[in-house]
Image 1 (cartoon, rainbow, N blue to C red):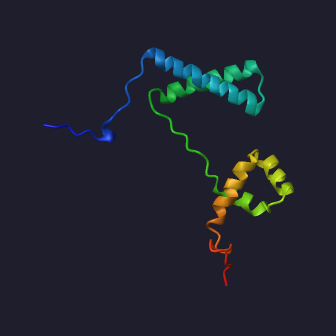
Image 2 (cartoon, rainbow, N blue to C red; image 1 turned 180 degrees about the vertical axis):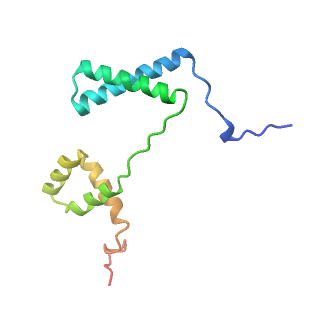
Image 3 (cartoon, rainbow, N blue to C red; image 1 turned 120 degrees about the horizontal axis):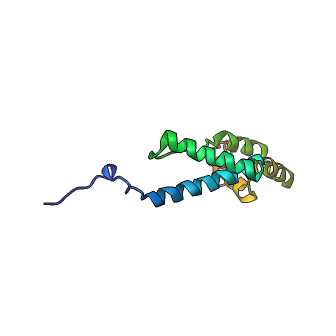
Length: 128
């Protein structure tokens, strides 16, 4: 007799107390870095803030998995495609505004070209 295992039934192994504490410490360090770098808060206040966030999340969600979805970037990408005209000036302007690399901007613009029927076909012939 064989046993069939469904992936939906597989649960992660419970963490030991030490593993849970290590994860909490790492989360606190991540929050500290974010608060210091993104908000500019000084080290002392950032540490208090990070600790409060971790403690609050533990009280409210302790033991649960937390999913934070990535933001929808379709509007940002469409704006980049509209603004980018292929010139170094437009590239520099977009890089400064978005913080994206030159390669990433080119990837975004190339991805949009496949959906634009006004552009020439792969054969090189333009639409009539």
